[in-house]
Length: 238
Image 1 (cartoon, rainbow, N blue to C red):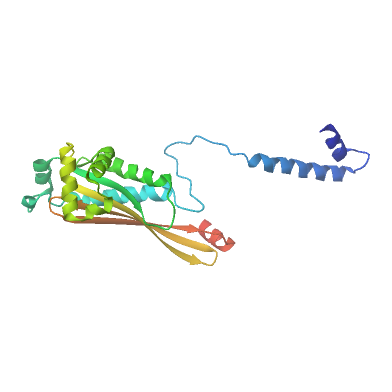
Image 2: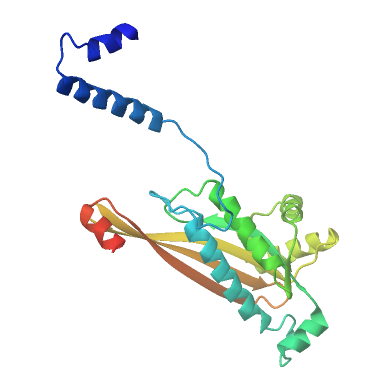
């Protein structure tokens, strides 16, 4: 190392300007090697989410889930649970029926991007939001999984009324009766402009009443730009 630095900074062979230039290159190279090392940082849980450069992350899915669940439960609260509830007010239904139980069967990714662990995270975000309501609650996901194993049904089988009834009976035997089945699906649509693109991410929630087979749908869409060209980067920065 001493010989190396001596050859670089040796006064006998190089001028001051040459040595200064070589020193700058050397330290810049060392800095680049140092930047290649990953470091972690603990951030405030309430701080804004980092925006992914190549695909959607929690900056898309969290607000979409919050808006979709809020809109869905607001609709459901005004609908009758049983046929005999028709004509009753929201307060009367709540008083007669108590807290309504939802069986959430998870998130289907039908979009063009891999979600990885974001899929499970989105599932838990939706579940948490439901539990925060004073009119609705959600069945334990482990009980739901056990019910599917016990009946040998797939999630898409539950779209069929007879399969849905069989599944509801199975969960009733597990002391987990419910009033609704909730399906969630993520879809994407991409618009390309040469090197740049825009992706619209849709989160659709379908809530099916197991007593009446009536369904409620809520869809929230958020757009995200992925920019490669300088023009697009400047435009989005303004």
